[in-house]
Length: 543
Image 1 (spheres, rainbow, N blue to C red):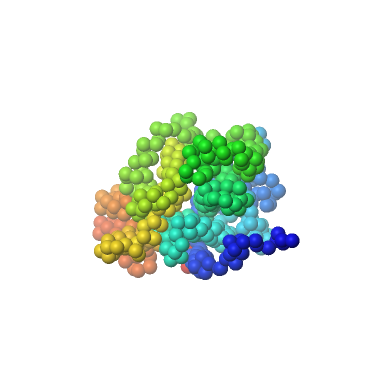
Image 2: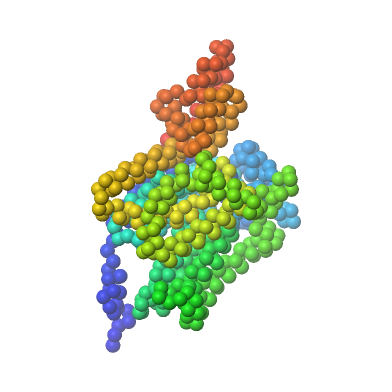
C-alpha cells in the first residue's frame, strides 16, 4: 500500500528539499541590522498617537474608549493634548452618548499596537495615553523592524516571480526601499508600515493564484496549493479592511481577476462560467465568507465606537464652511493629478520615487511576458489613484512625499525588474553603460536625499521654514523656495552640513549680514531654535 504521507513524485520531493535561499537570509539580516542601528528617536506627530492612546487605555482600563474625564490626565505634554483634541473629530471620534473618545482610525491599529505597549507596561508598570518616552520609542522601533522585514520578504518574493537571478532580486529590493521614500515609512513610527505588507501580500498571492489557474494538470485550477494563495490574498484584504476601509476597492478588483483567472486560450467569459460552475463553493468559502466575516466585525466595531454600524468615524471633523475635511469629491482629482505628476514639490511622484520612472523603460517587455499581471497592476494603480485623488487631503499635508500613493508606486515599479534583468545581457555596451550611469546618478541622488531627510525629525522643514518666513527677507525666502520647492531633502542636506560639518547655514549667514550688532541676541535665539530642530533622529545618537 502506498504511504500517503510520503511524496509520490519528484516535484513534491523537490519542494520538500528546497535549499535555503541564503541571498534572502543575508538580505533580511542586513536590513534588520541597518534598521536597528538607525532606530528613530522622534515620535511621528498625528494619527498614530490616537491609535496608541486607545491601545494604552485598553491596557490600563480594560475598555477601548477614553473617558471624557481623562482628558486632563492623558499624559504627554500639554501641547500634544491640545493638538490632538483641539478640533472635534480630527483624531478622535467623540461619542457623546458614551462619554468617550475613540480613535477614528481602523480598529486594526489598536490591536497592532498591543505587543509593544504590553511589553512597556510589563517593564515600566504603566503606559501613558499620550506617551512620548524613550522607552516607548525604542520598543516601537524594534517592533516595527519585524514589519519592515515582512515588507522586504514580500518584495523579494514578488521579484522572484519575474526573475531567478538572486542578484537582481536583491538589487531591486534595495533600490526600491532605500532610493525612494519607502525607507522613511518603514522606520517612522506611524501607520503606513502596517498597510504595506498586507498590500504586497495581496498582490503576491493573487499572482500565484492566477498563475496556478493557468497551469495544466493536477498542479492547476483544482490544486489546494493554488487555492491556498487565494485564501491568503483574501486574508490580506481582510487585514487591510481593519486598518482602512478604503482598501475595500481590492475586494472588487481581486474578485474580478480571481473569477476570470484561467488558461489564456479560453475567452474571458468562458473562464468565468467555468470557474463558477466548478469552483463555486471554493469562491464562497475562501473569498466571500472571510470578507463577510471581516466586514461584520468592522460594522460591529463601528456600532460600539461610533454609534452606528455604517459610521466609519470620519464625519465629525468639519471646517468653518461646515464641510468635512475628510470628504470625497471628484473636483479635487485634476489638482491632485497635477500635484502628483506635473508640479514640483513634496507631492511629486517622480522626484520621490525615481524607480517608477525607470520602470517605464521595461513596461513594454514586461507586458509582452506578463500581460494579465500588467493589467492587474494597471487596474490597481488607476483605481487607487483616482479614488485617492478625490479626497480633500490628497496631498498628505505635512507628511513626506506623496504618501497616499506609496503602495501603488511600489506596484507600478515592478516592471523595473525587466530592465534590471536584461541590463547585463544588453548587446550594445554603450547602451548598457549609459543606462547604468543614468541609474547610478538618479538613484544615488535619491539615496542621498533619503539619508538627509531621515536624519531629522519628520517635519523639520515645517518647523524651520515658518520661522524663516517670518523674518521677511527676500534672500531667505528665495532660499527656502529653492531648497524645499523641489525636494525637502535639499534643506535637510544643508542642515546636516551645518549640524555635523560646521558649514554655515545660509539663512543665519544672511541674518549676520543685516542684523545690527546690538541685536546679536536675536540671531542667537534663531540659531538655538535651528539647532534644536536639527537634532538627529537616531535613537543611539540622540542622548
